[in-house]
Length: 488
Ligand code: SAM
Ligand code: SF4
Image (tube, rainbow, N blue to C red; front, side, top):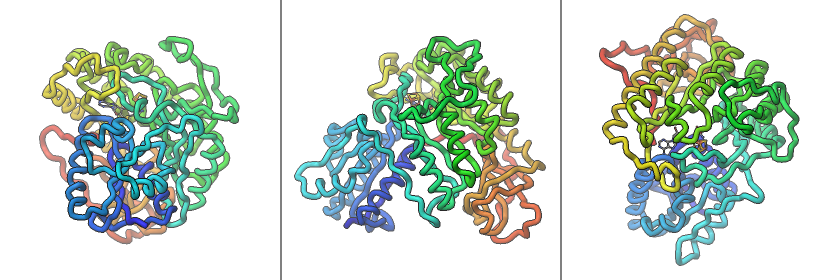
């Protein structure tokens, strides 16, 4: 039996997969190593969304290959999107790798490891489970289950955004039966989870695979002025029905979130669910990618800036105070300064609590390869810096507006200083001094200060116990650059 360590690159979905990888390996009798130094198996769970992520993998494999030369018994496995994307050709560039497996092949890992042990050549398994999709449920264990947990509702993506490699690496959309989803949420809550985030690439395009969910309130109502095309005019309601089914079946769940929805599936029924379900957080991550219709068309996002804003306005009218986060790509092929100015204008009009900004990165197997990567790197960097500065100012403003207000905070654990760390329903991070017993509870917190990316709070009636959070830093002069940009 091997001692293993998993190194994760990329998004929440990959982190979630890595946890399932750990559970599958522990279930087969393997145990977790303290680190690389005492591991017999190193599994790299990879991301290929931007080129930088692949470069990181290459340098990491190089570092581990060095270890393998000293310890020939070390097994190197590469899982996730790069394994799926490159398959055997990856082995030519990284001959030290013993096993390659795609995102859908995690359940087969123990058997594949046995195969790799006796094999003369590396083992490759990157088949999509199209006929009988399998969704690994998280092990629900009191003491191990986090306060904030993730549950997969679908995998793959049927969109064809011209810059994006995900449809190639994750395959077509496959949906999980709603009964399985509700059961997993219930088991996690019974084991101590209080918040669940539903995961899917276009999570709100969810369809119940057994047609087991009836229409939700709002189904068929689509007042959007700007929506074109029959498919976009439909108001699908199955995702809203799923949210309602979870809320009804799991009363112990305190907060429900989902990521990432596609704007064209932000339907009336989903807005109605936000209006009526207390459990739904007052925050939505709604990637817009660009503010220029010309660029949105070339990206094949299938909405215009006006349509995005119209849907956002309807959500805001129904859910006062809801905050929005978004993803933006700068320097998409053919993006002019004027196009980019439209992106900044959209950001100013909509107002986001958080912007994940990315420089366009050309990816193999995507349609945008044919458009050419024609925005110079320096120009991409300049546009990203401008976007960051704008988003940063908005975020700072939003944070400072919270000072003096009372917020409901769900405490998830302790932060670096040892103070309690939690989130408001609008997703702002809050630090406050308080006892262990509050972890997993919703508390009224008075916001007493704001940091760059989080808030400082006091819990009325609670005698401060344990380490206190650090005081907010005085603001430095000059343009701030605090808007988080996800490392690729
Ligand atoms: N499915 C989600 C959606 O539709 O918004 C997002 C999936 S992707 C993992 C996360 C983000 O990466 C995207 O929203 C996009 O902003 C960014 N991204 C995807 N492909 C990219 C590329 N080729 N270059 C730069 N950023 C990219
Ligand atoms: Fe990629 Fe577009 Fe699918 Fe999101 S919706 S995963 S950006 S193809």
